[in-house]
Length: 635
Image (cartoon, rainbow, N blue to C red; front, side, top):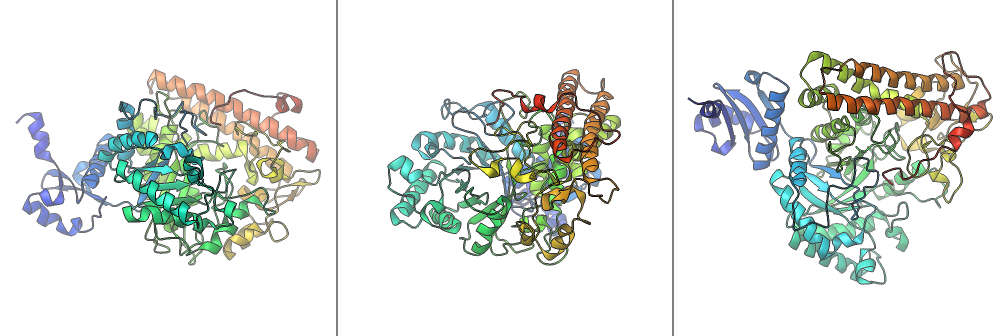
């Protein structure tokens, strides 16, 4: 028997209905548990069997088998049924039609609109295959700050070509809809969602889209936020806007993903309150094919935020998670930080909506509130860079997102180890060293950027580097000083009942935990409380000393990451070793920049000396205030 025939004799990949009768009989009980996209891996009668009830399930199962081979699992012990816990598992591309990518740090958009639909680049096929290998089944290909042109025949033809390329891999295409597209494209006098002419325009446009893309997934919408048009322009609610589009796609089986990132600088409340205040009263008023897309935290993808209070608060309205895979506020493309650590922290947060154990992950998978529609989205970090993601290790975030989208209860240590094994090596030293770096990297970054609950202290606009001094301009809620409010006495944002009372949006259990400045975990201290510089904390340090020590720990952590990586020279191929080593030099340098700039700035208010062990800044404050770089990518 030649090798090809021997392999065929040892491996069966087939839909369950196509398996031999004796195998079907022995596996029937397990096969009954397989859902539409699920699969069964089984070692049976000397054979490795991959089976499913659908073609896409069979594809997922085949990729799962390849993963087990790559990670050297024992195939003789295979007996695994896998069904995705979340239905809609999407990447959100913030790609513009001119091929720039908002918050993109890995080159230009991979969609070459000028060549489409005439040319299908091999990268599109590779993209679809890579996503299918981790269970992603949808992609929104254009920026949420939407350009109405994408809804014209010129671009629908191009989107259809991408949809055709993705379809064999089980991936549906979604489009972002600019709310005032009827006015932009056809000169309607209004975009009022309750206007019959506007409603008909969207029904006609949707019908046109489905002639190009028969399995079009639906619309993703950003409205009434950061200058984007929306139902507020006409005195209507978010439900009015979402339901108009939902009615248009409903006959074709489409959905509407309506972002909850709605806030207005003219609203006289704490910005992080606004989404909850806007959407909570609308619970149960959305159509069944609407799912509200909520960021992981109530502000904006900060290094650390408490989970968004809407999770657990809308039992009658399906909510989906929006994570940011691209590192807008986390060092962009040159810092190594394992985002799965952040995501796990959010997913396993308890909403207490139905008592203890009501985790965010159970909201997302529908089990807590019996949602009929479930979803999760990740803002893509993919671009035209040779390695797709800029930083070699940022591929791990793309991979981890897919794994957690499939099952938000997965163990992130196992996810990290599998990625290392498949991407770098099965060598024990490589695995343990890289895994150690990955699992510690998130806390290290938080320490050198935003310790103790500080937030939104990045530079203006491009968000690269520190900017705690950012103030003024047209909007207070786009400044750092709005959030930290540092003065000669204290620092922090009071969100208790004596302040903005954003804390009231959380369950009573969290009000008790977070409401007391004496007992709150230090990672959220300045998120919820104003604290005197000289206040003694539970660590025995004053607030100022604890802040300074945290920044120093972050710098030392970045140096430790660099030292750990250097141990792997000779065990990693030279090109990737040098690339990551070079980026780690940048990370250490920028960690020191963060520490020095922030401590100098805040030190002018505290007027307290740096504690022992904290290194003196390399420059004076004026140096950092005037440090500028042009054309920072991603804006």
